[in-house]
Length: 387
Image (cartoon, rainbow, N blue to C red):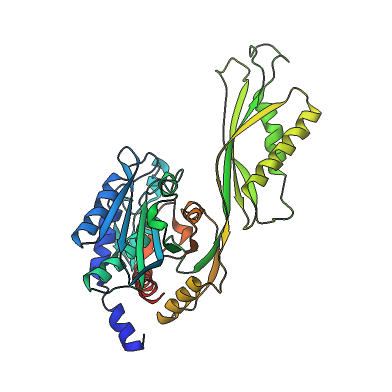
């Protein structure tokens, strides 16, 4: 596509319309937990209906569902999937005090749109959706099918992307573009994640009796300390830590249970199962020292890391698209976990790229730069029509 045609193509983006669409989305309080995505689902559905884009819903739980939309291409082969989640994390009472603007009312100031979900990730989702709308509105037929997967529950247990495993819409799909906030950098790999609740068992006794019972808190501390000081030599970027703890029957009783959560973030290539093999080793070490020690654990989730080669056709197409926007391609590893860890089980080749900075999400005064919002939409249009 020559420069003049490319510019004419990009000029289809109505910035005011896109900002309005995003503002409306940010104004929707689709917090999760506890799964309040329905109003956001209805908003996305409304935009699809209004613009004549075919779609279907995938029920996940009561009043919770994914949305799958499609624009047909010249060929059904090797479709491109764009994905974004519709839920946002809640705002705690303490965090609310640190916001300079109402978190669930979009505010535009100094070229930025503020509000919960502005970066994570309603900007990426709406940008991809608007790109599809522009293709449909202007009767532009892409080379291959374009699919949008709008999911629920990404911020919790990823029930939305789990529900899409082996969905027939992915039978002819090949590529996956995750529209998470990357500052418009290309993330061609993503770290893995796994976490579990660990229960250390003790023996109850009356709190007034010295030296009796087996305090589960003290026993848990032994294991927590071992976890804290255990590193993974072969994978130096992997780390794990205790993030929550709970114990006690009531204040007068020596606790016989202490439950704590261990969260592990894994270097690319480090298998999640290896984390729990290491935990087994640590439990055994303590048992060898104290035969009365007993600990069990329940794994909440295991999310694999992944890597896509820079020479892959999808990565090359994105690099070319960025160059068309006069932006130098920059590569990074995505440190968080995304729906990609579940959707790649459908045999998709993934990449993460989208507007917004991960450093400003899940905290006060979240925002997205409008410049990146517009650039992402143009890039997604480029990918949809050029790959």
